[in-house]
Image (tube, rainbow, N blue to C red; front, side, top):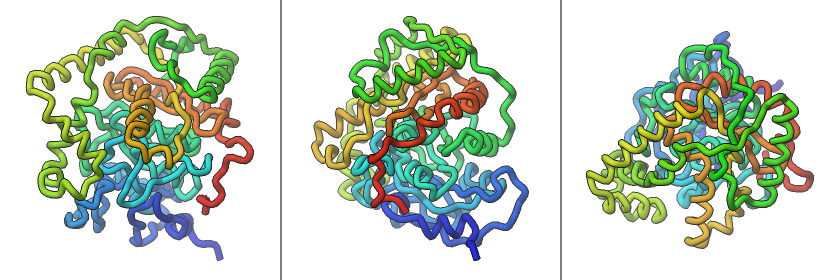
Length: 416
């Protein structure tokens, strides 16, 4: 007799993708939009009866959550089965998904390569078929980077579109709650549950913008080739891709984006940083320590400039989307991250293109491309989410072959 999907998913869940597997009762049929689907929950969302560790041993004495985070509660009410808490970068503070406490999740597409971060375990679990949906957060690309590296779809909504109640914050200025899935239909259904309302019918303008001076330098050759192939697919589908300068990007280059996570993480993880400094990943504490370099006027200036950039982006994009490679790099080998200089360089590159959507308070989606570990990203201004969601339905089938990794690259030892 075949077990239900949730029981099977929990049986297949394993480290380092999960920090803990849930053992609660299997939900009965709900007739909800997510009935029969399984959800891997990033380890910074409260799940009633479980500890919320945010990928950190420094939080392992925290009390059990007394209620679900609002996003978790909405998914549970919609009929989804919760598999477990997925591993992540500690406090969600990097784009590479490395975790020295619980292990580092790998992409199932390329042997020995990382899944990306910070929602690393969720991306790997979905890519391996352990879960249908990964619930995660995105502060600078934490849903889209791992989606690209694992060959699935990742969506970062406008921040105020999905409530963050009951989720451990990294940067309240840049954080947003979204999902990853293997197909556009599942992602669409999950996002409508999270926002507790259907998306309006909205078409993405056929004119897409390719910035002249942003996002395409220092591309790995395979990324450049895959992106050019994707341009042809988009053109054949009727999209007109125009290369142009966007004045708001000049302001964007002046912004010290790191101010937000450095300063705000010290607020949200104050006790851990002050009292359990030696139990936190040293690469995370180094970033948190940089808050001491930021004066109050500096931080206020960054907040003001960020809002100016967001308003300018809304005005200049005119409802259109920017198209870029999700990341300029392929998934790095886990062994490459041992070197501190290499880690910092790769982390900056991984986050470079994706951080734009968070700064402009916009929305963005990553779709998989032909080369394993490469994604195509569409970025739109705030509250243009419906256009990207509906565009994914059209574009995902056109890029269906992109979800199939190249022969010989699958790491079979990491699959269930």
